[in-house]
Image 1 (cartoon, rainbow, N blue to C red):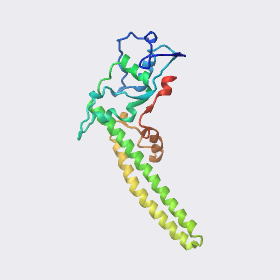
Image 2 (image 1 turned 45 degrees about the vertical axis):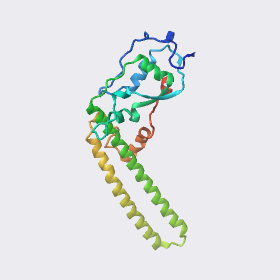
Image 3 (image 1 turned 120 degrees about the vertical axis):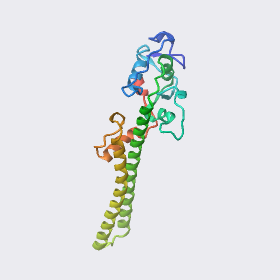
Image 4 (image 1 turned 90 degrees about the vertical axis):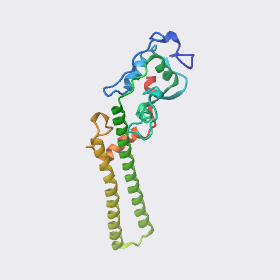
Length: 229
């Protein structure tokens, strides 16, 4: 494997692009940076087998930061849009530097695109959090019922029947409250253009939440393995 000596950028003799020349950052049909295509493009501009160094840090694929001002109390906050987790990637620092050295900053998406992308993320996050809270309450109530049973070995059939009725009534209240909130999030998702939805509203909410957790929980995309491959 070839190992660079410069912690900032790879050695110039390994570049497959003339120093000072820059190529366009790949953009998808929505006007957002195509992250997979962008990583592949930058990898293609260095000698095969190069090992990226310099530690790791996070790259905002919608750059520069000064192009995305923080606008409070606005329908669209460009800074918040830029900082969405799916717009950031953990990369080798040297690769991050190389991105800026060989590609042009992507054009700022239209305000409508930034709005729908941000709203799609808000809806997905809300659904995930609401579903997680529903499951948490259900587990807490079930544990409470089990404690009652374990602490009352002589509960008897009548006691069990009463406890079962209370259990079912409580669970119905929990489900009615939380599923009302979930229905609201599903309806909001349906109002978005399809290309900005992070999930399919027709899928069961619990199943969707499990998949969304892999997207919502991380603070950024983990791309170091892809870069190294």
